[in-house]
Length: 410
Ligand code: AMP
Ligand code: MG
Image (cartoon, rainbow, N blue to C red; front, side):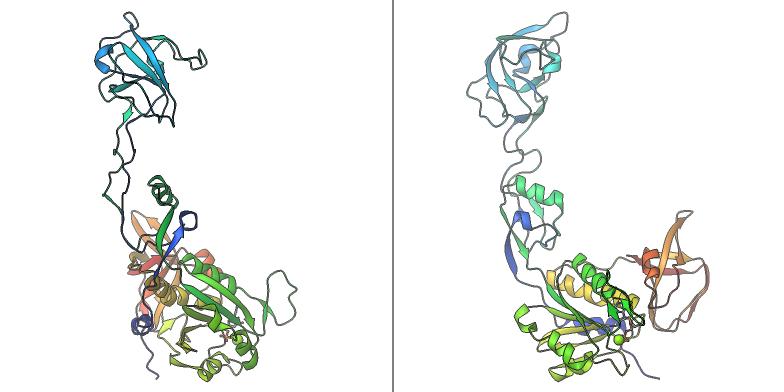
């Protein structure tokens, strides 16, 4: 029997060919989902100044100690401080300034009395700046003030290198004033599908044809891992047509060329021949199920991965082999997080390292796994029904019901 390359060895051979990409300065509004190429430290205190957290009056808290509805304390209003303006006057005893949420606290003041605690509780009652107000309730020093640097102070670390930017991260960097962000260059992958039987969705399906599902699945999957994907279209099962589709490959400046289908042992499988004409192959079979005909090499010095054509095989191979490549190109150190589930039925395997589509649920606090739909490598519905992949290690032919098996979420 042939000795197949283990999944781990194949991955090691593949990953040796890739290193982290250089960094690029991107406008912040193009940085969503990008990876930071270096640590980022605060360059601004946030909030940048002491400011009011309420609409009200900036006061000296000592001045209004003991104020009640029965015994209100009168203050003279000296200034109106709207958000976005800078106060001009110092608050002295017996004085207050009207202040809006987010406006800077004037010098001398040490607290804000919300309008609700005064005779101006209804903001429509008087838009004009009142000359005097009555305070009905006292506040303590610091009340309703957001002090400068409460959220973060200059020099504190915000993010580590390798962090993936989320909407709230962009908001925080915007609040810090960063207009551009140093990110890792996005990996670029060209994707070529192949097969005479393929028809594009939306078009008429003629006898013997099937719709192309790999292109959209693999393209969006690789995009979800952080790559930019250039779609080279579908090549016919024809040596020359495949070569034609790859004619401009050097001008695309890609990190990886990926093909689907045409790499097994069928007489119309020409992808490998094309690669060998102007490149080399390291391996073309891996001890994995589904996805045995996984092919790795180089085409015109560009790393090349040939994914099997069966949709489930292509999907699983992209997860197991291409995601780690993209992570490495992006400098992401993420390890696959494995959990363990009890299987509700016996699982029969063929001794290859198997990635089975499963539906994981929780039963009495434990994960339990049930195989999702039919497990054939062409049956993409199993991927639709699954929320996880179970990993059956190489060499294992059967796992009895009730045993634990590792899985990861998909
Ligand atoms: P191959 O590797 O070319 O022998 O293809 C294996 C199986 O995958 C065949 O049943 C093909 O019809 C199917 N297949 C190949 N490419 C695609 C695709 N883009 N979308 C859906 N099925 C495909
Ligand atoms: Mg084919």
